[in-house]
Image (cartoon, rainbow, N blue to C red):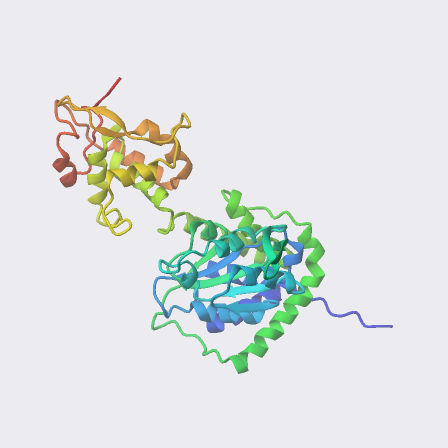
Length: 414
């Protein structure tokens, strides 16, 4: 009679993986430890999943523990391949050639997508497409003039570490960990590869064994999402929640709490797209309940926001032309591009400007919902301009008193 191998407790195993990270990594939040641990587990189940979350360790300054975090992930994940720079063609071939999908680890990802990186659209395309199973790209293969077209898969787990930010299309497919320098009271053990890599590999092998016991359950899983987590964030977190549910114990609850926290943090992130930041500032800090406003006044108000970036957009202050270009990528409630229109002022002039009614659809669709209440309360507390004074005629007053509303004295042109 053969002995039945002992059952692996998934919750206890994930606890061990988390403790291993805590020995060498200081993450900014408890949610980050949960997310990274689940990400390690999901890499062992990639063949049972329809999607994979990218993992992004980002920081504004060097020395924040990003590369060390990537090193620990490397010891815990299957077929780990660390790279600092690689061509898109090499990446496609690696995914095709590896038995079992590789776990790609990009260090110094800012050298790929930073301001001086040049054209890396093929790599961006690889990372964008490869988060869903079945993603393939058409590439040329062959020698010299003997070239043929071939389909290459890009589906694999990818973790990245770098300074600054990443293209929005990659960020929306990522669990983002905003790393920071350790405080004096935050201590970690020094990591020595020749000593500690074996420990990490032992955990990796146990994760692989456990993954074999839950693969069918994970493949059939439809994890319940926290309230408000839908669309792309749900795609990103579904594989991680599936791992948590398979492990059981306290992991399903911790996973959903971490999901809600990190998804909300990403929505509030200062690295939101320039267009979304513009729309949000227009709604909450420029219009403030006004129904229309000349472009010159909009620009003046934006440039007066000391904590915003409108004085330095592509190395120069925001201009009416730049404002029109940014807003033109969004549409009005009538599904037409937002464009400046004529505004009649009390002085009889008709400068070009913007109407709140044209912006409402974009505000509703793209701006963070939680700011709407504060914007509404600010509007209700804003005194209305009366008499013949027009915001278009008194731009200097806006600079010194941005709380004043500009609704009353302006009249739309026919």
